[in-house]
Image 1: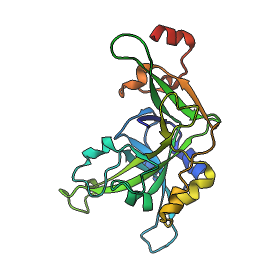
Image 2: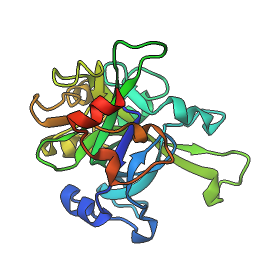
Image 3: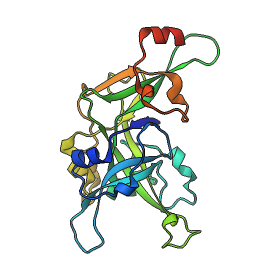
Image 4: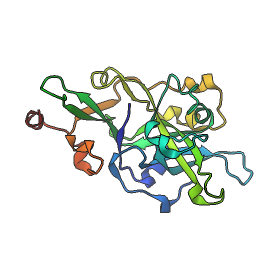
Length: 250
């Protein structure tokens, strides 16, 4: 699964790397090394303009992490819907409409995963790891987004609308399987156009895109326990622990 990630790439760099044509600099958010559920995050998506043009425009948006289905009575479901399984995303009521027409990419530096450490008394400790691309470029996580309206407010009230997202997950590759059995599904550039195309709605064709790159693209290293507290933030959270650090901790 994916429950925390780091996102420090500037919007200007994301625009260049993903071929974004539309974004609002006033909506920029601060870099974060500890993005948690319900936090804002950058997402690349394509939408058809309202000016009558039929050509979708690639945009950079700020969405809230944790999908709220359009039919939900309350946005409180967001914290439970931060991940969507690739093998069932096409059929689950909470995700299937977004999977058909509202797909996005979440550019992140990397994500955190926790491994239970065997031995000891009482509750076993959990060692956090940071997973990133071995070449240092951002991970383009496959995501879905959805619009939710607060019907206690008028439809023309900007606060009446909330746009949220979720991360698609798949089975972990061999490098990560000892830490956790699942991992976020990330895409290589060759799959970006098809994944973002809102005109592509065939479930079988879309499911064919849910294939992670071959093993070997990722790097994983242990990090300190500070990332477990959402109030902590900063580049030290992704610093690799040394053997001395780990001996002191455990």
